[in-house]
Length: 369
Ligand code: BGC
Image (cartoon, protein in one colour):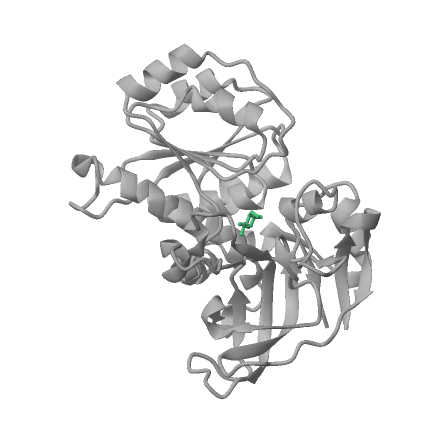
C-alpha cells in the first residue's frame, strides 16, 4: 500500500510501501482514505524539527487531517457500519495509570506528554490508502459533507479554542447573551491570519455571533480577503493598518484568535487586546525567535484589565462532533465560500511539491482514489 512518509534518519520525504493494516480487536474499524489535508505541522515535520516515527521504525507516515469511508468493522463495533464516512481524531492516550485526562478520553489535556499523535508523534498517520483504529477515535460524517469534511480537524482547533473562551467568559455574566451560556453576541473578535485555521476560525466566530475582523499580513485585495468579506467579516492587512489603528477601528477587542503560527505578529497584537479580553494561541512556532516586548506594560495590563491568555491544542470527540455540525452550518450559509477554502486537490504523486515546495493556496488536499 502506498504511503507518504518521512525518514528522519536520512532526512528524506518519500513514498513508501506500507503494510495493509488489519483489524486486530473487536472494537476496531478499517477505513479507506478519501482525502488528507496538508497543514503547517506536516510541512514542519518535513523539515525534521518536529515529529517522530513509531519506536522501531525508521519512517513516519504523515497525515493527521483525514476523511475516509469504513470498509470493515470489528465484531464489537456499535457506532458505525460499513460504508459510513468518518473523520479520525489525532491524539492517542498515554498509558500512565494516573493520567486523569487520558483515562477520561481527554488526551488533548494529557499531563505527562507521553501521548502519541497519528502522523506526527510515534504513530503512523493517514496519508496512505487504508488505516485501522478503535471506533472511539472516529466521528460520523453525513454524506452531504463528503467534499468538505477533510477540514473537520483544523476546525476542531477553533471548536476547542472557543469552548475555552466560553469557560473564561462565564466570569462576565452580563456579557453572556443568556445567563450562564456565553456566545459571541455583542462581542468583537479579531482573528490573526487568513490561512485555513484563520478562515475556519473566523467562520466559527461569525456563526457564534461575534463581530469578526480578520487581521493578516497579506495586502488586500487577495483571494483570502475576498472569502473573509463573503462571510460578513472585515479584512484588515497589517500592510496598511497598524495594530493600534485596528484596535481604534474595532473598539474593545474581546477575543483575539491567533492563527499565524509565529510569535512576533501574535505578541504585537496581544498588546491591543481589549479590557477583560481573551487571547487564544493556536500556533506552534519552531523555537527560533526571541522578542523584545514591553513586558512591564503588558504585565500591568494583564493584571489591571483581567486579560486571559489560553493555548489550545488538539481536540476531543466533542470538538470533532461540533466541527461536523459547524461545517454543515458553514455549507448552509456560505456554500460557495466554504468550498473555496480547499484551493487544490492533488494526487499522492504530488506530495513533494505540496510538502516541501513553496506554500500556496489555502487548504491543499491529497485525494486517494
Ligand atoms: C494538530 C494537532 C496536534 C498539534 C501538535 C496540529 O497540527 O492539528 O492535533 O496536537 O499539531 O502536534
